[in-house]
Every structure is written in structure tokens, then in C-alpha cells.
Image 1 (cartoon, rainbow, N blue to C red):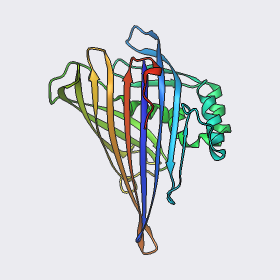
Image 2: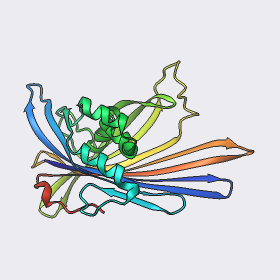
Image 3: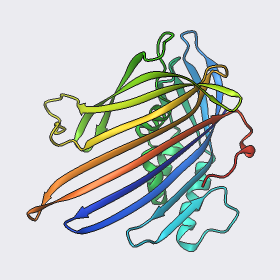
Image 4: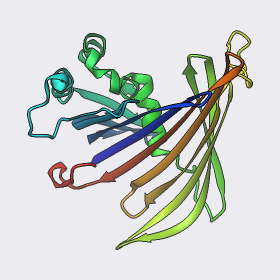
Length: 274
């Protein structure tokens, strides 16, 4: 089974009348191999990276790109990233999924830990490659299925705790079954999602409601019931933060999109992203 995750992020910073922006697109192709299914329905998988790419546009408009699938020799300033990415393609990671598609565990090798610590060139992927980052990204990408059969309009929720620089927060995703839709020859079950973020309520945590950025996350999951797996998901997250500065304020607005595609095609059958 092949999984493609593509994340595009645009961060716009406004200070008085000055506006700057940074754009980043990163993603990877994964190959999942089912090792076994436990009696309780938990699925044990091995995950391998088959392709990684990263594109950035700095505030001055300069762009850079790295793609492990490219046959072109990387530019001098991109060679370190290209070498680091080639190393990542050797890594194997263990995953455990619940019957509802929840990420129960991510098992990374000691080699992965060493790579993240020793290769600064991987900083652009670090949020996705740490154990916590990968678990959060995959959980967001895959969503959570209902415990029992549902009708159109039925809702269920999934809650997870996230550690942030401001302390621990709780993200509650509200899922709504919206009915069946057709995609070519396939009938896909459409599930909408909206997420609310609140402080975890830990008295020792600095994360309070007034300090958290305004956040909105909405999207759609398309589940292929006949095939028994998620076919596609598209999520958009908006974060807005404002802090006082020199009698005014600094506003930082970040819009991120996360797209996931799951197929059973051979990896070589994929078209290159973007």
C-alpha cells in the first residue's frame, strides 16, 4: 500500500505596514507493508520512505527545491539536503494502527534518531520525522473512523493531547458522516471534520486560552469502504497569532494544507508531485 502526504504552508508576518511571507511545501511517499493483525484488531505495519521532497520560497522571493526522485545533480547549496534524504530512504519505521485508524504507536530505529540529531539539513522535515510529529501528522491525515455503523449526519469525536512550546493542549476533532459520493468507478464515503483546540487544564502549564493562537482546522476524508481503507483526505488549518509590539502588534498568519492519497498501485506507477 502506498501513501502520499503533501503539506503546503504559507506564513505571513505583518508588522505595521510591512508584510513578509515564507512558503514551504514538503511531502513524502511511503510504502506500508502489513506485518500482522492482532486478535484485538490492531494492525502492525512497516513503513518505508520511497520519496521525499521539499520546496521553499523565502521572503525575498528566492526559491530552493530538493526531490529524492530527481535525476538532476543538486545545486551546491542543496547537496547536503540531497545526501541526507538519500540516507532517509534506507530507514524502516514500525507503526501500530487501531481498527478505527488511530495511530497507537510509532517505533523508530536508533539510526533515525541519530540522523535527526546529526544532519541539520533535515530540519525542514524534522516536524514530520520526530516520533511525536509523525504520529500527529499521520493521525491528522488518516482521521478516526466511527466505532459502529453510522447514518448521514451522525457524529463522533477523537481527542488527542499535543505538547507545544506553550505547554500541553487538547485537540478535539468532531467528525460528521456526510454520505456517499462517486469518484469515477468508486463509491467513497465522505466524512467532514472540524477541530477545536483548548488548554489541557494543567495548572503548571503556561498554555491558557488567552495565549493560544486562534486556530481553525477543517477538512474532508474520503473512505473506500469496498477496499477497506482511506482513499484521500484534504485538510486546511489556519493559525492566527497577535502579540503587542512597539505600541502596535505583530500578526502572524499561517495557512497549511495537508493532502493524503492512499493507493495499491506499484510505487513506480505514481506521477511525480507538483
